[in-house]
Length: 180
Image 1 (cartoon, rainbow, N blue to C red):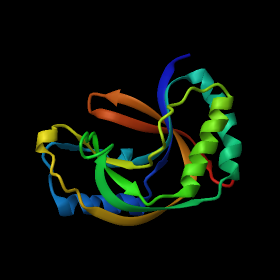
Image 2: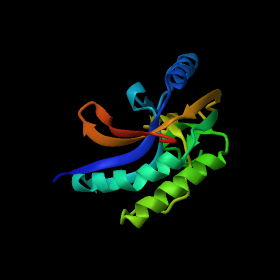
Image 3: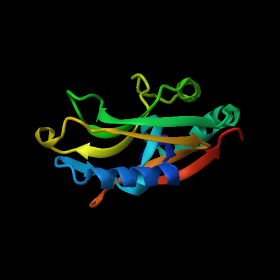
């Protein structure tokens, strides 16, 4: 069995993807940034890292009850900012308003995965959608602006992350509807 780099996430809705496209057009090219491909726009719920393909069925069994118990979640995106912060920008990110339901879902999912032996990052959960990767910090403008857009999270997807000659590509492997 092989190894895959994987994460659990939520793909950007068509309406959100369109809003991001409009925002990019309005702000024009930004020196020092490399835009994330539209098909890769997502919010990570849990980064899994390198996982043996044989562990994927265990992962599915661990998260299925958590996803089934979770009602759809309304996420309100409101700010475009540097992530993790302006002093050390790695990405230009779309940030949501604080959301207790999203935080709770993340905690429940992590607890279920850890109970099955998965080793996960211990960092606090900071939901975001990466819009662009920072290439050169000296070329990055200081003010990014904002964007107001709502999205209802209705499903969770297991994504595989593959590095290609054209950049990283995320492939949806399996999805679960919230609330069963």
